[in-house]
Length: 217
Image (cartoon, rainbow, N blue to C red; front, side, top):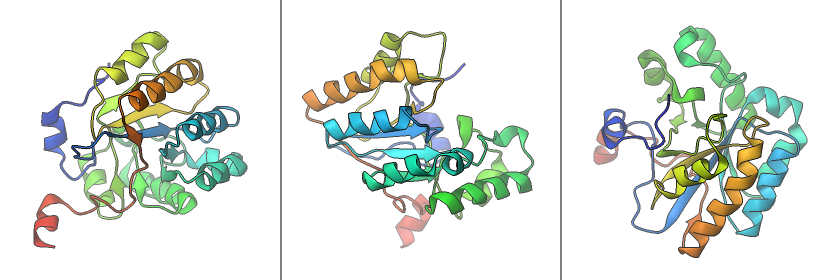
């Protein structure tokens, strides 16, 4: 069970996480989790390039080590990168200290402060500690491309019915999601481009401060 659209009240409950980028402009923030993966990630890069689109890739550290040349392709194309732990670890089922070390190891490979917890799952103490060191990026819209129980058409509708100005949208450049991604991503890019949208990467340090800190800055 998962929510395609993250409710506003949940976003407001955790204001130090980045859920979307408040904007009145037609801009989307496409993100891709779980790569880099040969074949899948380079194909994603080709689709993005066709629309002059920039995106953010939350990479699993183990995949960076296995496929460094693909990781370098992502960066060379001008996209942002962030960490997604070393082994796609679930914060709810991992003790704090091992989890922190796992996150830090992956961040040392990406060399950025952008971080997305796998499954969006963090314990309160984990969140409290990590948000002092990383920009924790969640999402506004989940495409569901990882879900074997929905069609590619449903995946497409999950995005087009819910994403608007400033939305952070999640896709996966993984083998598991590849079939739906190959159908959905080109249609999402074409749909929003026709509506006058542009696609941007997330800024590494934007929103690192809490609302209270921003007021006093």
